[in-house]
Length: 235
Image (tube, rainbow, N blue to C red):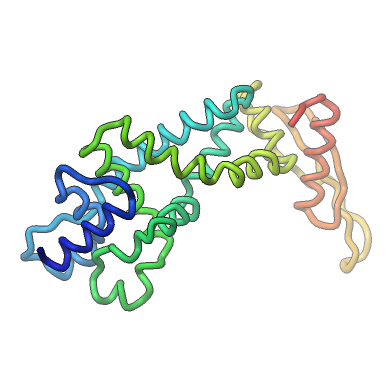
């Protein structure tokens, strides 16, 4: 068995999936920098599988949080899913299975830290999901992805619970009224070193809340908090 074949065997054991078509796994772990350095090799990079895996992850993560949070509004579900499938989140999943160790990279990419780069890990994880789906089907893919979500359930729950007032208000306004809140600074007072900003939040053309703070950001948060209280919006 070749060195690459041995590496793929180790990786299959690492992830608990054994491929019928080992070529799919090899493709999922091949970065474009490698194929660019070997144009005469009959090797494809993982970008097509990344496209497929991205769509499958959106669906499976959306399905998981939909079932896990039955009372959450659409805006909340969208926000939580976005936090999970962003590059840093998927890169952390990739790190759990030592994915970077098995990537095929070009010499330059490898020499500059490509095995630990979040963008590479995220793309390869998405490609791996796409490869598992093509090789094993949706049920096996669902079980594999759900394993990561269940392992990280505590962090996901903290993400769900720690949404700030601006996020909660936006989720409510978009989900119930199909309107995105906007903010405006209506007044500033005090010296430059101790300035106080007054902000208003509008939903449509109506002012829903007003708040003050030592920065524009803090004033907007206070305005959103006031709007939530004034309109009895629960978190």
